[in-house]
Image (cartoon, rainbow, N blue to C red):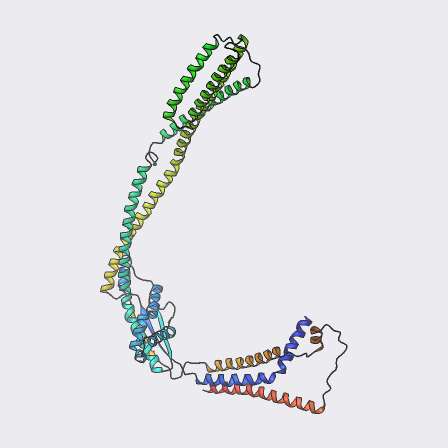
Length: 513
């Protein structure tokens, strides 16, 4: 806190060093500012008052048959009428302001000035409005107010009719648009019914649920059969991978075995050709048949190789064991084929079940969409009926407006201009000039003090140097120095007081008129 106070005191000392600049700048700004305020032209305020009567005899009689604008809407219409550029151009023409406009830019400036200075004020709920305008020439101000009042009244009388015509045209467009919407909604509902036959609310839905239940039962049976086939296949795999074989009583010679293998291979090839005609190469039945065919071909090649090594004959025990292994391999191949076939069947049933389930789940969605369509149709149809009724009301209201006057304007106070000017407020402006002059002088002195810094205290010297401060030498003023300093302070105070007295004189002059 002490450092902040010390810093403030340094700023004050630095500004005080250039106090004469403060006084000179303040005098210059004040003198020129007061001269400018004195030269400001007087502003004369012309005003008029008009009463809007919206109560007529037909109002209670046609209250339920026609539409009449509210008072706030009427006020908004009046404001928009005054601020529209065509009406302001008409005001400028009637007040002869356009005679001074030599170029289009000058006329635009006149219209902008009228838009800023013409003021319409409402007196509340009494339907009484005040119209005012300020101008240095009192006659011009009065002419502008009179022209604005005439345009205001004349345009307001026709605004209601124009609004009704515009409303009727708008209603005609909306009726046509909503009729097209209704036709489009009819087509959408027809197309929706055509795409979702059997799922529309009110139609029979039992067939879907019966098919779903049947598909679920078939899927469960197929899964059970697949599980049994997988267990058989795993059993055959276990026997081939290490269980001790149990020889079966398989009659026949090796030649008969080869004959059986050749027949099976031929049958598998025929079956594979038939499957390729019906399915793709990646179908599970095709792949399983290929595996069985490859296994049979490998068995036949193995038998031929063994017979070549044995010289055309084999022992009874070796042939029997080999036949048993072949039978197990063939059984395994058949089991794998059956597993693949059942897996394909399970997949097919699963797809059928999912499809039916999706269809059943889609029924509530279809019903919701159909309900939304019909609800939207009802909303549009209701709006269409209301638009038809509103159009009839607008036509009747237009007929009433064309034959009667529902709004009456009465000029309470004609345009007049007081003898004394309404502005500008020279006392306020002069006070502002005085405060601005003082602020400008202080600001200049402060800037000079910051631009030309000096060390004015021990604390400032301690902040700007890191060397130890051993002591300070004070100034012992002589009597002559004291007299000079006092004369300077007296002159500065006299100049400041004179500026303040001058401001008081200027304010008194304006107060006295």
